[in-house]
Length: 212
Ligand SMILES: Cc1cc2nc3c(=O)[nH]c(=O)nc-3n(C[C@H](O)[C@H](O)[C@H](O)COP(=O)(O)O)c2cc1C
Image 1 (cartoon, rainbow, N blue to C red):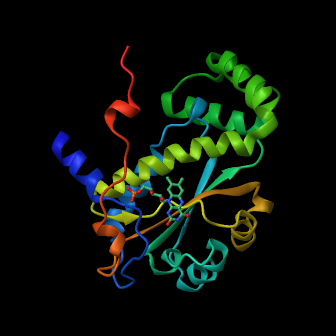
Image 2 (image 1 turned 30 degrees about the horizontal axis):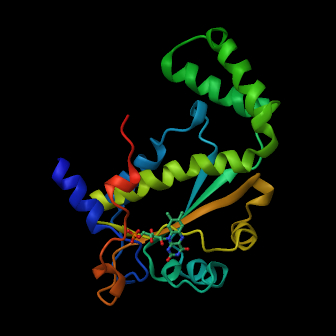
């Protein structure tokens, strides 16, 4: 298991070109969907919505909004991580209700936790920048997705090189209280992508770790 994990992490890279003829199977996608759903988040609030674009026209339309990066067009599935721009008491109540229903507990038992969350993300310090806070959460989902995709021999390219407003506009996010956080086209690398053969550039363990 340890060897397989490191082998997959070496194999993966930020794919610059996908083979447009190769599509992710429904079975593999369903596993990745579940992996995304299982991503942990602060307080468990899951302040996101994952947009999955397979429509070729829309993928192509998003190339200019991605500074001309063509991998958003030739990928199989274009995954767009969007996050909530605001949190209200109703959002926290939805989480509390879901939690009580899943675990068979009474809402009263979560009153303290509910008020704690509200005092932080609805009325407290974190409420000042919900999109910023939610974006941090979405990167946990991104990391989770990239590793899980690699385990299934699926390529992807994490991307911050896009115009947020253009994505928000194309997906009609504003009226839904959402905004684009990060993007990740996924599929299968093209044989012509010279980046797949490049050595990984990473600092040494001595540079990166301090053991105390
Ligand atoms: C948050 C994030 C944003 C990135 N944005 C882009 C991007 O817009 N376009 C791109 O080609 N690569 C992008 N990359 C890929 C990085 O350049 C790449 O992951 C890094 O150089 C390490 O190489 P590797 O992923 O191939 O191992 C991004 C990576 C991350 C994690």
